[in-house]
Image (cartoon, rainbow, N blue to C red):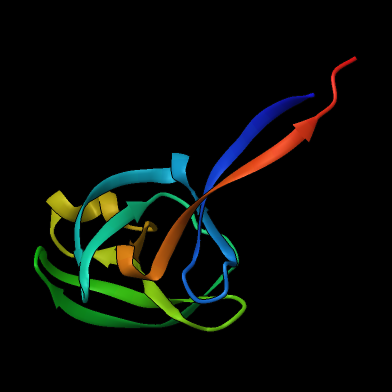
Amino acid sequence: MEDLVGPRLYSCCNCRNHVSLHDDIISKAFQGRNGRAFLFSHAMNISVGPKEDRHLMTGLHTVADIYCGDCREVLGWKYERAYEASQKYKEGKFIFEKAKIVKENCVESNVVN
């Protein structure tokens, strides 16, 4: 028997719903409402709230809160628009607050004869 390690996932801290892949992390150097946060290129099993303009540490952005698709826990936000040219790379990306997600390794068993 051989164990294969599958994708490393991040899940909602509340209900363990899978919300993103470790390989989708762009940066771990972000600040959320409650401490450190990670910038991800993709998210899954989430819902996106209404857009609003917020003054963040890097200037004015249009953002929308993101919620766990299962338990509705607020996990972070999605950057919809950046007003400063140097911040445009964030558009369409997702912030997950470190305190709101947990890292999991999916392990699959594969029988080899």
